[in-house]
Image 1 (cartoon, rainbow, N blue to C red):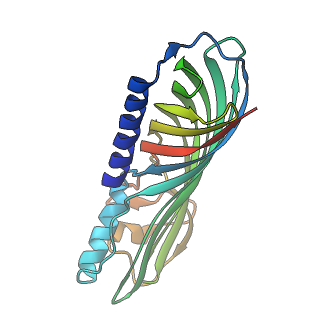
Image 2: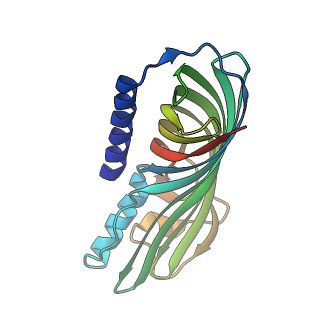
Amino acid sequence: MKNIRKLFQLSLVSIILVFIQIPIAIARGGGGGHTLGGLLAFTSPNQSDINNLISAANTREGGISTKELGSGYELTGTYQYRFSGTMFAIMVRPSYFMQSQKGKGTSGGFDYVLSGWTLFPMFKMIPLENSFIKFFMQTGVGYGSMSGMISEAGSMVTFKTGSFGGVLGLGAEFCFTDEHCMSLEGNMRYLPFERNIATDVVTGNGFAAGSLTNAVKGQEVELNNRDLGTTMSGMLATIGYVYNF
């Protein structure tokens, strides 16, 4: 999480310094056109329920070194169309999300894996720009799907979930030519998952938290007599390349 904050802060400082040194004009409307891009996002969704499981497993195994789920990563594609003569654009963004942690105790291996995808149609506004930099704001609503696996010393449950959410952010594009640009973004996304449905259950030595022992295929996974929660919510520090044509 500290590395993500440092990257985000560095990105904002870089943008501010560029704004100070380079004259910026209020956007009078670009020529329009299409944009394709590939982006890498660093994020740290707070998986508190699964981290509680990891803590319980560490205690049961006498202090194994399984770390809590921390940083996650997303590979994102983007397609944008900017309306000719305006500062407005629309985008479609699919992404693939990954977050995992592994450990080993006296009873066996301990794996906690989350992965999934999102698809967000978005609206973008470019209020300030010149030939080198474009400052933008963006927002959108979309859908995310997540799959997960909790494996503790021979016991395993896999699950799947999905939900709608929203995203809001800002950033800048640094264009070395009219076509080739680097993008830096900071986005805040709201995408929690409250119902995780078990797709497979293997009963072995039992989970560290007893309520997961009762997981049943096709039913909601529960932790301490309530629904196990997962999330893709949080800040995304994003860097990538975009191509205008």
